Amino acid sequence: MVTSHEEFSPRQQAVLDCALQLLVSGGEKGLTTAGLARAANCSKESIYKWFGDRDGLLAAMIAHQASKVRASAENGHAMDAAQFRAYLVAFAHDLLEVLSGDVSLALNRLAIGQASHADSRLGRLLIERGRKRIDQSAMALLEAGKRRGLIRYEDREAAYHTLYGLIVRDLHVRMLLGEKGARQPDTFEAMAEEAIDRFFALFGAHTVN
Amino acid sequence: MVTSHEEFSPRQQAVLDCALQLLVSGGEKGLTTAGLARAANCSKESIYKWFGDRDGLLAAMIAHQASKVRASAENGHAMDAAQFRAYLVAFAHDLLEVLSGDVSLALNRLAIGQASHADSRLGRLLIERGRKRIDQSAMALLEAGKRRGLIRYEDREAAYHTLYGLIVRDLHVRMLLGEKGARQPDTFEAMAEEAIDRFFALFGAHTVN
DNA sequence: TCCGTACCGTACCGTTCGGTACGGTTATCG
DNA sequence: CGATAACCGTACCGAACGGTACGGTACGGA
Image 1 (cartoon, rainbow over the protein chains, first blue to last red):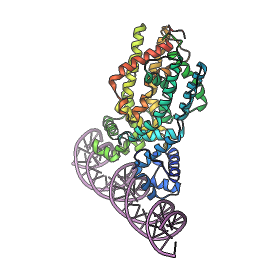
Image 2 (image 1 turned 180 degrees about the vertical axis):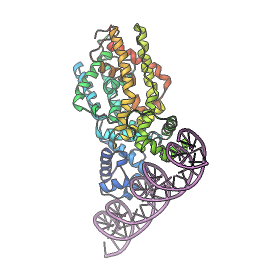
Image 3 (image 1 turned 45 degrees about the vertical axis):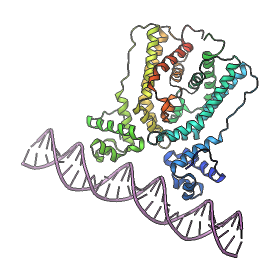
């Protein structure tokens, strides 16, 4: 049983990467212990020794994937309005890129599929390890913008959730449902710009409210 | 194979309702042909005769559930700003109620879980039969508001998607992931009001842009 | 009354998958 | 060199599930 934040050996990480690839290509039904053992050139016995059981393997996959992305903690320096806006656009663009990624979609599908019968352990893990990081960095950015008088808001969380909604809309669910029209990364740039425009219209310091 | 829009006999509808209940309580793994036959007091043979195979059953469940909700086609009469706003708030509230419903969440989880390996047939069915209706009625409402000079926008779809994002934010995905904190229907009213406030701030006719 | 139809309940079959056990191989350490 | 440990590949087991077949029953129409 993988409890909290143990690190995995390089060999185990390779197996986890292989498992992620299998999950991406074949969905949950495409990820079997026998198939993983064959694809990763390891034995089923090792898989069970390392990860306990299948649920442990899934949890380890989420933890492993989450450990790959590092939070970008910058914007400590002074920034003007244009830079702040550029940061927000970049955040929006990155968010759309991340959410539309193959591995992200596969893991979210997996966790959502499990959410009904198995409590929601994977779902909580996914939110805790994957989303919280993004939320924190974005809210730090918002806080910096407010401190410099570039935006104004009462509730930081509410402002962030509004920003998120303006950026993502219903794209995430549509992509999760497999709608191909929703996955066009070449449109993300324009969508990011538009979302940030609207965000400034709502929270910009120059507006009336 | 259930092709397009055949209707189901009362007996078949009862079985489909039973299947939905099973899906809600146990997730996809909780819905087996044997279990459904036992719960619905019918034979497996009948299930296969009626719906072809398991996929046909799932598709029939989506079609059956979608056939329950009828589009509310009203607001043909004249309305003032307050009424228009009330309609929008009601739409937002209804949307949140629908998306947080047990059956809706279960079906979305099912379709999302299948989206990876089985093309995305169920996903397309869910969007086509469930969402399109909501989208159309909401956009008709927006159009009526624009015609009366209560709001202004260039692109109807863009305005609607923004409205959707302001209302739902990331609540849908969080509920799909099983996060309990996201499902608090007593907060939907306030969320709907806030979302519509922001929508008017962006698209209201009295604002600068 | 007889026949066909639709249906139920159960038994059955083949497959797949999670999980375990075992023999063989490599490598590190004393 | 001998021993212990880690690991691979394969075989194996039990359970569950999708799908099919069959006997029994109620009903409606000729």
